[in-house]
Image (cartoon, rainbow, N blue to C red; front, top):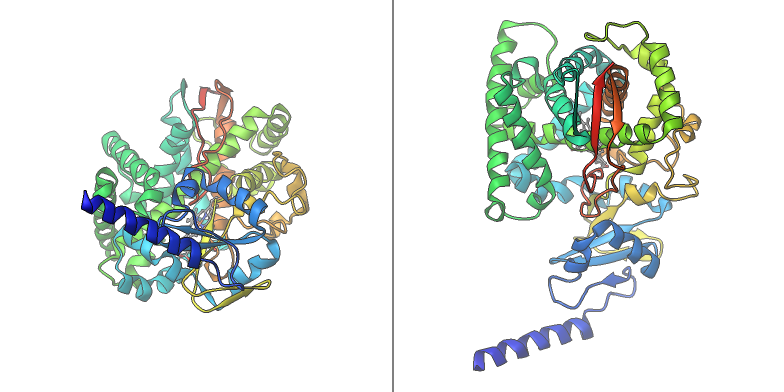
Length: 464
Ligand code: HEM
């Protein structure tokens, strides 16, 4: 009994101290700290993080801090402040992501700070628009093979169908043909393990492995897979002089024993954002008859009379389908990542506020793309708004930040746009679809990465 009284008194004391003395410094942004010390507003925030951001902005203004599980998360929501987010020397990308990198790929702090810049330089140089063009031919073949394995007709969850084609195709295209799991069983095993890993990634980035046993075992499975793939990649390298895969480029330049772990992160980065966007792009096109008609006319004009079973789509063909590319860009805009992050390493001045070192700084591409100043009728799927961008010259629209910015801007962006354009053109050329469910809403649960569908979306498909 005495113990209970003591604990109660201590709790009341901590809460009172928190309320009385826990006020922000006058120069710091308004702070949402909840009632429970340390947890802060974790429960309210965790329920629907994306919606929480928008409500907090309406109540507290464009810059605000949320205390969540011992961390201070400071959000910048004005476009005018994004430049500081992306380029200020007072904020740091590596320090922001080091802990999640450790949890999701078991990469130690020392290794990450030593190798990250070298890995990034290699990825950037391998995925320039020019090198991406070289990858487009083999990628089309991979897509085509996996699409053919769907058979002449059937029904499936659109999301699962897309994963079953894109996971193995992109993996093989970026990490190497010999590495693609060959037998049906291995391909399915890879799909299952990667899906578990991807689905749990956000929780896995916050919690120790012990709380997520199945997720942690998928992570270890993927690390072992990548270890075998690197061994094979090195063997193939010494016997062949052909084009090197991205994995082979990494293996020849980085000698760190954790290279397989970096490989898993690379694999995740290349699939986790692109696949949900492919789902949305196909679903938006199929559910808008006017959009579908224009897209199909362009696809048929560009690749008419091709072999329906071994269909070859070139970059020249894709250039004949600008409207399909606008659909891709519009899907990326509408379902952009919930938030991206940096760590404040020196006091950062934003408007009249000083944001203290140690704060995590966040901005939300998802909400930035709902600013009507840059995107009129922001909730509408309007591919034609991309007519103003110069996509041929890789110039995107003002206010578009789905790929982040500054020196850590997504190095896979040109590959992603090419891959999605190619996939959507190919799948619509080869198959006729009927949507059996309405297009689902995006799930409100995730902040990391592009938006996931909140419910099923069944389709019937038939080979043309
Ligand atoms: C629609 C698809 C994609 C979207 C929306 C997307 C978005 C992003 C964003 C927002 C970031 C963080 C940027 C920042 O903090 O400023 C990022 C990082 C990254 N992305 Fe992408 N991405 C996509 C596809 C890809 C693909 C296909 C690849 C690889 C082929 C890739 C590789 C990476 C890598 C390696 C990083 C980490 C960069 C670093 O360590 O600094 N992404 N991506």
